[in-house]
Length: 162
Image (cartoon, rainbow, N blue to C red; front, side, top):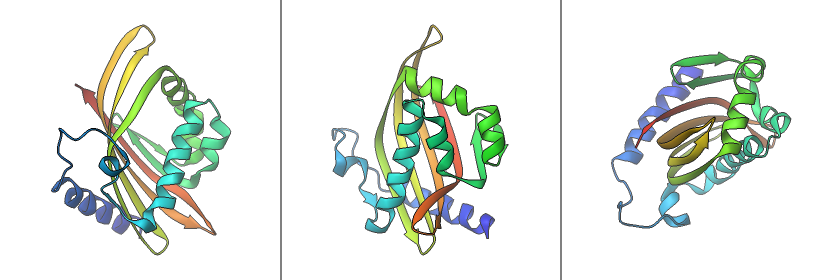
């Protein structure tokens, strides 16, 4: 079932990218989320809460939003599960998030029952460990409903120099 959800999210992300917001349009809520279905808004709130927790150094709050079996892809590496992510890269991700500014420039998402996906494009700028950062970023997050809350089951982060 997990593989089906990943493939579904990939297909949906490709569909979203086929009809982008014009580059000349300034970022606004309408520009950021032109394809975010009403059903996916609560899932996107979970994604935003995860990033806010990292940005403010509340790593326990960030980890609480992950499913135990969360799979995190970043920079060619993989963390298999919430515990491995917490032990390996959580603190570094929080330090990075506190040091730089991140802006979501476009977002899409949808939900189907107990599954949702949120795909975001953005830009990260600032200075981290003495190095200037100016990156184009992409993020795909898959979420699964856990009772009345969404839990993050997969994150795929990618970035490159602008």
